[in-house]
Length: 179
Image 1 (cartoon, rainbow, N blue to C red):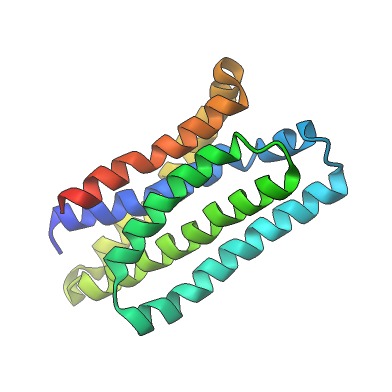
Image 2: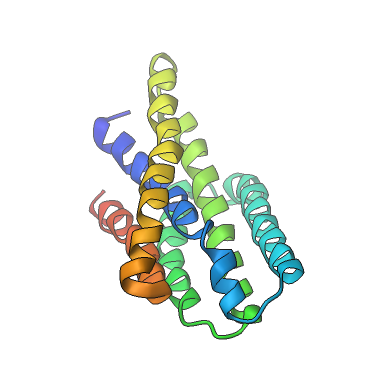
């Protein structure tokens, strides 16, 4: 696998992890501002992770059925950006839940397709290196998202947080189009 391909897969893996870590710690506060109690917040987060699981599980079927791994990565990335942005415009928990579930569902597809594609494209002798590079993306995404979330909300409010989340997907879009 070329370095360019590996870099594209790394960026595709990095985006969902960065967004998840950017948003996850502050979503309960945002939900609270919408007037949602602690119990409903727990149900909201459970639904979000169910959507992630559904996206992850559906990827195997999508992969086997369509064999369009890159296409699914690109579409998941393209659709995640507006959904993440619209989360900041949501004024009701139902709308926020639908949008958050969409972002996490698409993230599950994107993450799984990256792993499938890495396994398919990496030569046997380079699989360890390839999966090692891809495996660093969650850590880097955790650092980027975790370190950025608080300062972004401090300076730009929650609207700024969701704009930042949407913008995380832009490098992946420009990189995917150039391949």
